[in-house]
Image 1 (cartoon, rainbow, N blue to C red):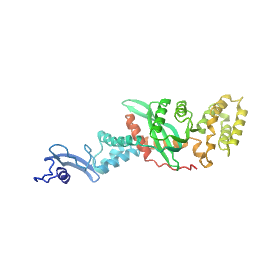
Image 2 (spheres, rainbow, N blue to C red):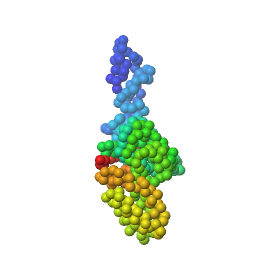
Image 3 (cartoon, one colour):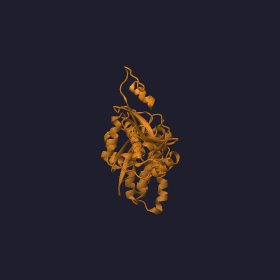
Image 4 (tube, rainbow, N blue to C red):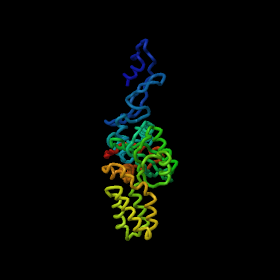
Length: 344
């Protein structure tokens, strides 16, 4: 640090040079947690104008950079705040305070803001749209928060989280904001959008991606249909529905769909109505190569991703703000490996 100050001032102690830019002003003390243990009363040199800052540690940070990074990764991995404190206490002799945790998360927030403004590829093979719920605690009160998510698949089959939006509830306005954000950052050509049946989501997709093919998740639709079927018959009827989705050709699927409608129209009219209202989007996956069908007829790709995220975030004590919630969730998402899928 003394050498840093010398380079900053342009002169050694007591030296008079034309390059001198200031003068020393003694030292101040602070504690610093390092990977080798805590350092107490560390003497840090300073200049008279207060412009010098060492690169040994960040300003106001009580942890050297690699220690701070390690603690941050523990939070992202879903380790509870208490457990992180216990580990830090054991390894370094000092546990992170609430303010220290806040500073560590501030770094994540800056990275998240840069990520959410990045440019996107123009052309995407698939975009999955869905939301995941979290609870944010404010003192003794809790609020439900949903993070709307766009998961994209590029032309090589690689998956990538494209955008996140925090909303109090799922709505058309929330999805409009997210989809407009995709377009603004460059993603204007999408071959297929895969969704559940939320009305607000479908309205937003129709408005901003009107020419894009859409696949209605057949698993969600199957559940809706089963809600109108007596429990005693659900097993057999589920098998019939599954047979439709797994037909080798669209023509065969349409034949079976018509047969299902004729068979159950009078007995279970509400179930048939629910099924046929999405007929135009249930079999869209047949427009794509057969190797893709298992990956695009449901929203399983994004739902399994959410399940992986929850396995980690469930270990976190609580989220106290929407900002901390979406930032940590984003960081967790970035740490999850997303396998490629066939797209041709």
